[in-house]
Length: 275
Ligand SMILES: C[S@@+](CC[C@H](N)C(=O)[O-])C[C@H]1O[C@@H](n2cnc3c(N)ncnc32)[C@H](O)[C@@H]1O
Image 1 (tube, rainbow, N blue to C red):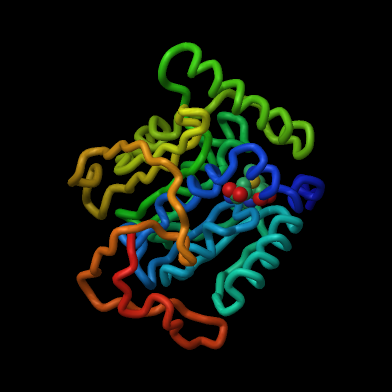
Image 2: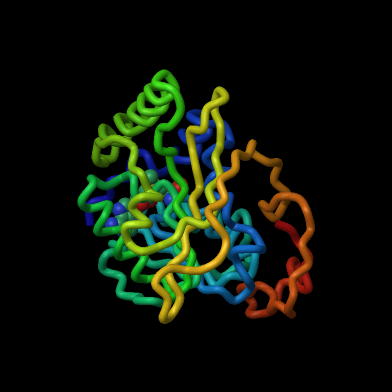
């Protein structure tokens, strides 16, 4: 299989740091919080890349599966895992995710800076496939460049900022060139309800967002409950767990994350960590 990330894969995280500071990093981790992931949840990370987000989910006790079509990216992911969390078990699939037939298996499906590599029709097909991999009631999380809003100058800046990145990836990885996608609209078209959005700012403008949407539960048309929450958040300092502040006790006993030795890690057992 031709590896489009052979050149750019090893320096991908460095490029994203140069381009955004820590904004992309914070965006990718924005929904990986106790209130969204319970220990034991099945989490899928599509197009994992270096995979700090997958590791953050596994540290919360999720059973994580990552998929990537690029051997270079998966090698980077394995390196990151060995360095950051050698005890964690994360299932790794080297495959085109469209060939992965895990229908309705996951509690959360994560697509961080993944859907933007495709042209519009492939992106729509891919998103429908990812949604299909979530169980009824599952969360679908998309972190990416945010859809331009605001005054015409801000909109033009955001499109140009995205286009510059898209051009680099078009040249070096043959990714598609297109305008910024409106993911909330796409998710709603597929029957999901957008539950939360978090924005990440560069030069005072919301350039990145993380969106959490929910599939309807069994027998539901669309999930009930809270209205869409949209908030603007400055990047937070990370703790060692990659989580934010404010402790929120959990309401039921939770199993601890599984380690390579098969034992439960003490890190988040009986946790009141955070959200
Ligand atoms: C722009 S990178 C994003 C990587 C990572 N999610 C991140 O946020 O850093 C896109 C990733 O998707 C992977 N990818 C592209 N097409 C894929 C496919 N059809 N199946 C699985 N992975 C794919 C690429 O190899 C690459 O690692």
